Image 1 (tube, one colour):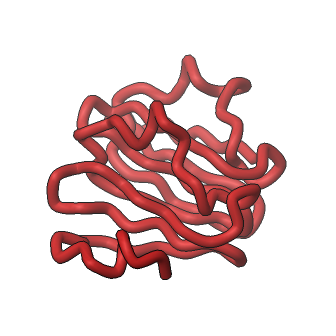
Image 2 (cartoon, one colour):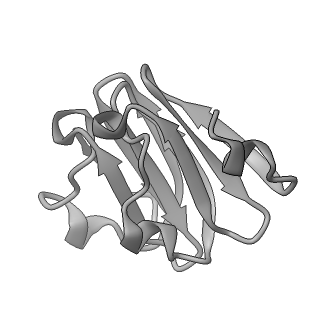
Length: 116
């Protein structure tokens, strides 16, 4: 674990995939470490989000649910790191779940959206 992450004292959630970890901080931001290709490096746009309320990890990617009900992902596309196919459907999401090959979003209107 990198020293800058080891020194944090406000971690409220940690998830993993096969090659990396992601931690959600009390301030709503996320940090990650491990293999960069598999999500171990948080993209700048995601790192600047101050409103992450949940994180999930597939085999090689991470998903982060924002307080506005949208989802941001990073890591390998084939494991759910790319939401371009479903981004328009990822609204009013209330929870995100993962398996080894992708993610499932449960929306507040009862819809389920999957990708990966």
